[in-house]
Length: 105
Image (cartoon, rainbow, N blue to C red; front, side, top):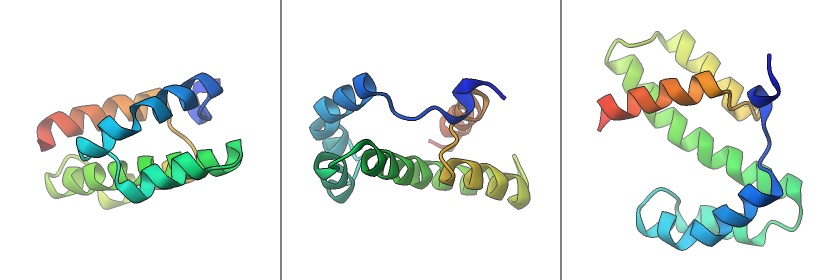
């Protein structure tokens, strides 16, 4: 396991994400409720909780699509989703989700 396996959102990333929120909302990548949660987070922990919820929502849709397409089992999808819900966002899983995303679209 590398440090990248459970990489929290760093201050620089937080600043960039906040700057991009209006665009992300208009593109449908973040809901207005999620944007509000990010903007109103008063500390790093609250901000990270909001980020994890967004990652989880995105991953759930892609993982469900992968199961439906026969690309992975429900057990594999559940294990990956649990890892994301617990704050993990490993590089290998991100790459796999992007692959599913390209097939899913």
